Length: 169
Image (tube, rainbow, N blue to C red; front, side, top):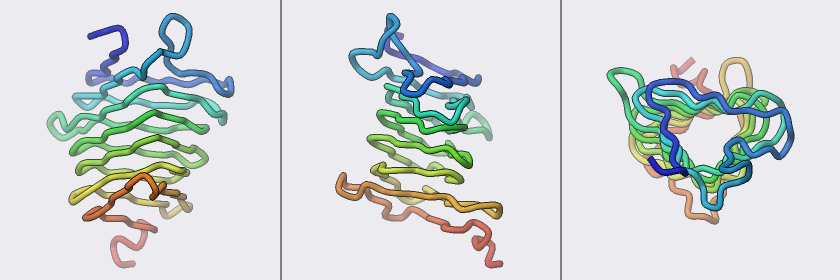
């Protein structure tokens, strides 16, 4: 690949910093001139966050489909993470942990699943048939703020506001 391309192929990449405002990926010790292309494929995982601080990931993240029964995944583990864009393809998962926040300029989900236990904030979302968004869990509430002015579209997306109720109990 090129200097601005990273591929996580079937393994885990954990990026985090306890320094507020820190860029999580740099080129020549500084923010890249254009966003990096970061692809997570073949069941790989991208895990962001080690501390309760705000960090930036200047990248267009793409989660590719399944490898057998395991899709690629993105976990926002801690703090506030600001990402240029995320595209989650069929069979992939995005999880926002309790206490963590995800901000993205664009989030496109194509038959992907997202679990929001923390906060998805000020993010335009596009999803369609086969896409599932679960907000909260049996142990706590999640929070979602969708930026509608940027043509968010969730037609056909299944949204569970309290997954405990998804089974009818």
